[in-house]
Image 1 (cartoon, rainbow, N blue to C red):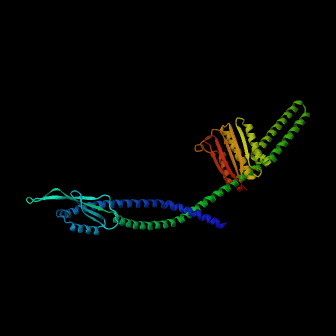
Image 2 (image 1 turned 30 degrees about the vertical axis):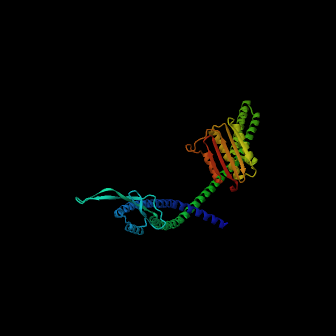
Image 3 (image 1 turned 90 degrees about the vertical axis):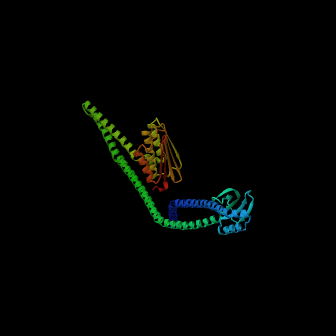
Length: 423
């Protein structure tokens, strides 16, 4: 059992640390991924821009060498120059020399499997007319064209290598951050678990105190009810009997007027004693529902609903009971009885309802209470909860149950009382 509890605590602690780590590291991972993607895309754009610039410069540089080759029709020296460029610069993939009609005269391709770009860079080889007098020259036409195709394969390979190194460094840093975060969340998770345990312990202690207070109140009510029943009611019965005897003795008094006055006073005392006795009986029933002891929970609720319905005919009250209520006694029965009693009192005082229903059912080890009316309802956010609702909540909390209320259209109260936790 201890091992199971320890394992459960470890899983809860691990789950808390995992959530804390996720909150801390997920934004960092997203940031790293975004920066990596942006760096890769920007590096590719830089490679394309650099290739374009180098291609144009290379085409322009080859124009001067190509002019001599085109004039004399000798391309060996130009081929050697281009081969040297291909060997020293892996970004050049192909150089083509065309005549004025765009007929290929020379085509030099780099070795290897590098893929060329779809675009090419072209420069025209101009025919120049040289002036002896005055100096200078003038373009009089095109002798041909120089086309250069570049390949990004080598440059992208180097960029990927650098990116891999950067990613490796970033991964090492991220792992260091994970280790540091794991170590820091260890203490935080333990502190959080301790705080949660303290809150749970305080809540349990609060429930125990509420249960003790409720039990003490019920015990005090029971003691007061017994005191009223045994002492006050007995005294009132004795007063009524004595008054009746005084009324009987008054018949022998003279004169008759005095006898009549004494008899009237004795009868008045008898009526007062009877009224006090009935008030005492009503107070005893409110303090300690004797129907609950005599009829059990089901019979006591039926009697309560019947009495409330007969006293307030403008509202129709119904009761539905499900499950075995014979074993529901003690604190569970008293709490259920008091909750229904307070709810019906609120319906009568505030709801202005035409119908109200009470449903009590036992399902397993729980007692479910559903009380509803079609009255005006109220807004809990704007209307302060009365003492009755607060008392109902406290009773439910003291027994470890759940309390829910919906007052948007009419009022409906849902209560669940766990019977196994009630001692």
